[in-house]
Length: 448
Figure (cartoon, rainbow, N blue to C red):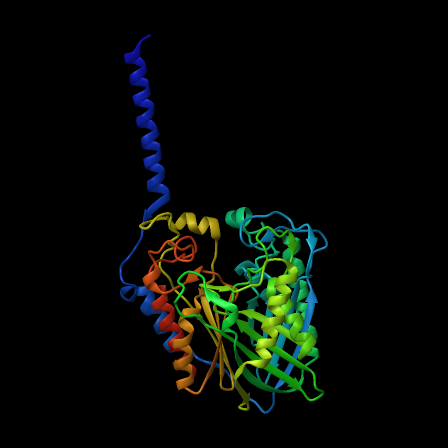
């Protein structure tokens, strides 16, 4: 046996393998950009865009509101989305709805669409916006929200990563969501009537915790807008910071998780219509009673009781002003990391995920400011922002999943911790905590 010849061949194969792996690493990977975000051109561009952005809308003479929902549960099972890929749901625990809430002051018409989904993907948002336009619905601002259930339906996220991890893509599913969204909006607009509007806030800190750092701050409050018609019918738009992850990750039924049961309880006890929009859910976990449908229902029922019995603030919104705007956000190159200082290259990220549609929406309703974020904001920021808003005489409501998704936005000092929120799910590099802080405080200052 010619060991010398075998050795040469083995060495040659090793060198070729090394060169191939080295070439792949160069093609697929690059280093993390840790340069200060405040020094970046995109940072100053976005803040200049905010400063120069006009606020649309006006002041009217009355409040008019309407609400409706449409069942968008598919006829055939589709893949579940949330946690890890689980395949198609095996039964329907909870039907999945799209809910519409419309508001006018006689001059400006705005609307919210709410989905019992993990997120509102940019493709879905664009499809609905196109459908609304074709239906000739007169809506000046259309806002998207989601409950962020981790046991909801998929089929609306195109692209390789959507196919692998987020329930794939099915045009029939998207078409169903579009048609049901338009149906709900039409019903809500046709049902509009004179309302009074109030803002309400309740401390529900016993039901939520910081899921990464025990003693870090949380946002403990449920915040509500309440719309009351003269005939006694009432609707509520509410937010809360606990992740909709009370249902087991092994549960194979279609479910809206605790927000579904909370809305159900609210509609039994006080309201004709309830719309739950996920709040600043980053870093926040539910202090649930268990992960079965029965125990999740108990959690939601207890939360409903707390909302009604632990109110800390209630204001009537008298000034019939509607203002609104959209801030498009420029960001660093994508920074999906595989280690502390190595990330996949932007072209690969863009291939896997496609458009992320980064932006902030804002809506001013009298003295109440609602901000919708494409970043999954951590609730640890909320206290600071709420104090800034209160100093300007504003109530503040923040929602996420506004038709864009750019991953988590967390405090910058956590960037190198080995939490999934700041590693796998922080998609645009270091510094975005301070960046979003500057943008949101800028919006609070601007609308005032």
